[in-house]
Image (cartoon, rainbow, N blue to C red; front, side, top):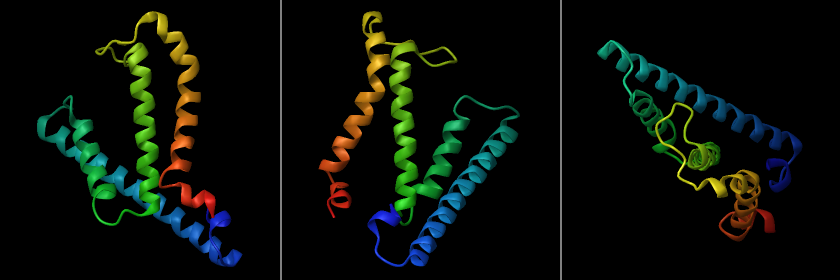
Length: 142
């Protein structure tokens, strides 16, 4: 996107790409460090891993790295990607339930095949339709 929508020399554009790549890698590494640290602390405190430890560790890392401070475009892209993964996982669970059991799919059996075939095309096309008709439209109209 930098090369397409930013003005400037190739050197300036490359500098922006490297800066964004560095921020992306740093933020993910910081999140992983916080997540693993919180998991270790919780497991050590109890002597074993509890059901919601991963949620608490993810919440702590997500807030610390991505939830507070400046909402950079790099952080926004990472969080939007994660949100999309969550939505797709919830759609998959609604059909078949999670891999570890528990929640069973709540979509009627006769609709599951149709949803499996069409979920991705619908998700992709609606995502693009909404981004070009909403706030993201300015990037594509310049």
